[in-house]
Image (tube, rainbow, N blue to C red; front, side, top):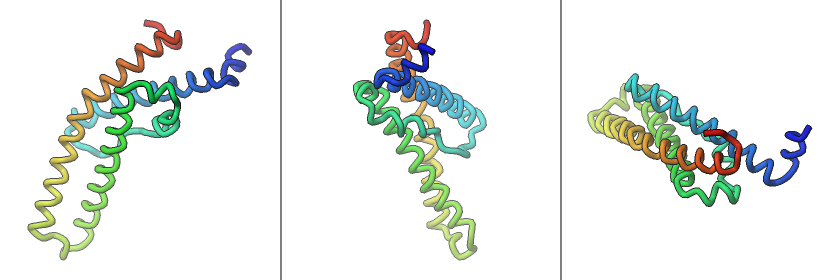
Length: 141
């Protein structure tokens, strides 16, 4: 009953949202490991909880979390752009020119570089958020 009442307060809702975001962040780290190990990028990072908390004052005060959120949005946008171009390229033989093949290769290399750059960003944001959640008493060490 007390847990339910805590979710009715603005601070309780904020804490709950931060916990959901923390779970999403951990899942994104797992997604990174899988894509990096397989050396095949086949999905976007999750960003549903990020969209929910990015306006919360508590989240705005965490600089590494803000960098993480911007990086996830950037990666996902680049991934969608790459997949659209790849789909267009494969759809018609007329699209398979040397220039388009080079552009596709360049985009794939860019996507791989963006993926590699995500690891330190995810880890830093996770550490900052974990520290704050411990401070708030929401998780234990």
